[in-house]
Image (spheres, rainbow, N blue to C red):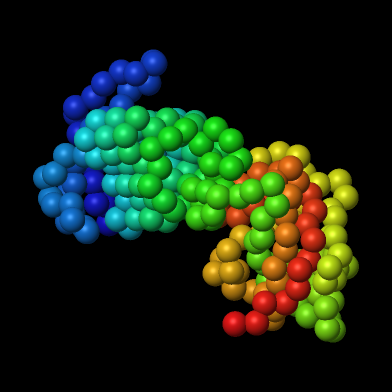
Length: 220
């Protein structure tokens, strides 16, 4: 079932045609007949969930807005950007390539790793900061990765990945860390200390790092 349609109202921007959207099935606070913002094609805005583009906001290219995300004001979302979860993008924000926004109220360009981590994980990282992951416990102070049983974490020792993937890809070789609530596999939650310089990328609500120091098991 569709919640909106592309209208005949259109505008040209940088050689791309954008169409204004109109609600055709009530959802959330959006009423039937209500006009929204401007998108290039249906793949830019999910037909399910409460995601919506408002007013003069633009979404185009391979960008995707879904979940309960909102894009409004004079914001542009384009390139390969994904905006989802409960994210709000507004003001004069320009969200382009390789950003995966899952939470927060964004009105700035996410032009460095600190801002990406702050927007997605809800923390402002210092040079050293703590994140979490779930693993399978082997013995006291020793754990193994869920996806690679040969990769071991030990309390007060550094775990390091060889030949890590240097790209911005989320699910690639490296150590994946996030908030305690991100994970739903494994029998043990561990805390890990990360150096900001060792962060490869921050995508889809988690960071991927070259190495980290295992602090130990978190019991809660």
